[in-house]
Image 1 (cartoon, helix red, strand yellow):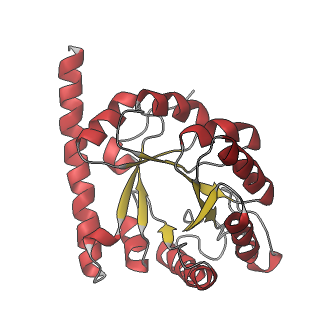
Image 2 (cartoon, helix red, strand yellow):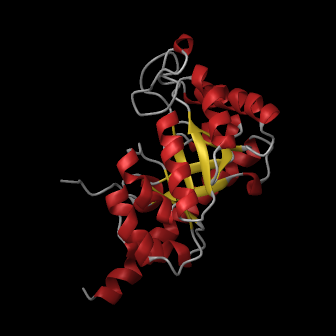
Length: 248
């Protein structure tokens, strides 16, 4: 098979997958009495090549997400000519911050003060404004203050303080909240309840920071529950791109 045939086949595959996801989001919006425009699809392109990102852009995708800087940085550079908003959704080590700030428009995984400081310093240095979401760990004990979750994130008790830090940090813009449906704790297996808890936290956050109205929740398996709860952004990978190639 030639490269052209391969890309043509891949485009058909991605277009069909995208249409199916679009249908799911539209149906979920209709069921929740929401307008389709209320929900933004972010396609998680991790482990997939820049050629897929290019195809998706051609199919109308405007938001893509990555979770590993070593994959994301070269891909973002290869796709710099495309009209895309890049979201970083993975756990972020401070030694990767300079690289991530060079291409990411939004970091969805802000979960500790040290990271806020590092992001602010690099955003100022790069003369960029970086959108930030506080990642909320719904598997952390709510009584622990700034407890930590298994998949990153700050416990519910630490959200307010961290949000205030982001809001005051030069070069950063507080955009809202993000969560990953927890695998353990009170919300394990209760995705909709988890996302509804995130919406409650968003209401509290918006009272203090009215512009921080982004709520990122839901993935391929639970986007309907996220839309029902009120999420503004869903992060879908597998349902659009297929089962991921094994890393290693």
